[in-house]
Image 1 (cartoon, rainbow, N blue to C red):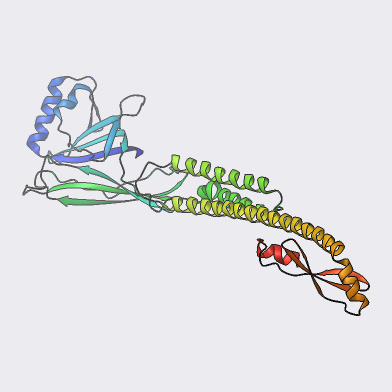
Image 2 (image 1 turned 120 degrees about the horizontal axis):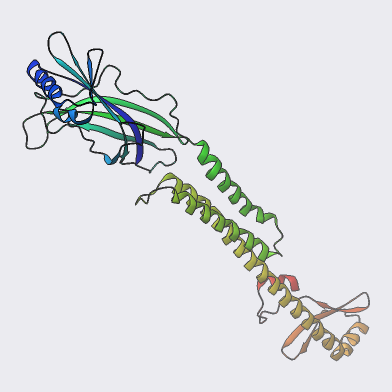
Length: 352
């Protein structure tokens, strides 16, 4: 809806008989509020009830108010020409709350067209026909809306209501409101882009500080949700998806994907550390076993070395088998892979 503060000016003529009847009643009423200035009657007060005024109504009007003004809000003039025909002019200022069926699917790139109609359903066209004057609708020069570019188009129409054979005339003004994007870009687009960029800036933070990275991403996601709620608060509740909904949902999807990536990296990083620690423990255990093997079977290797055989030699200690050999007069273990050892592939590679 929108509020329209406007002036109506009706101009119509009546025949000699009706004109004479008007003048007779006005003269007999002795209404002191009625003035006669330059061959024109300024009709006020009780004399107005003797004058017929076109009955026009606005279908889109939710509420009509008379603005506060000094004096009266309306003016009725009557002028009699040389042929005895009365020409009347009625001016009135009203403020109307106009209902408008708006479509926000393209918000904020939308353009709203609101219809404002002046209808007559009491008198058919052969009795009363309303049409615009040559000037039509005139806009005040200083009217400027903050968030819209404003224009209008006015036309005259004839219509035939259902189940009736007579035509009725009505007037229509189409107010066109085209939204300006500067406010939306500054208030919504730029902040959402900055917030989304901050979420991806956490990728340059060390993986060791996983809690800080995840906290940064969650804060940016909450900021986007708060901004989205603020944007939707300015719009009426609708059952369809608008452009701003798609924009904000895509931004939140990017931030959410960053949070998922951080969680996955943190999980893989901890899993890698556990595997490395397990491999280190296993290597240390096997070193201890090799030391025991060398002490138990050192005499076998020494006898073999004295006989000129430098190995490798297979030694056993419990369920563990190990190849050892002489190198630079030192007893060393030859790395092997124990198929019965339950370790991940990474641990086996580290062990080798």
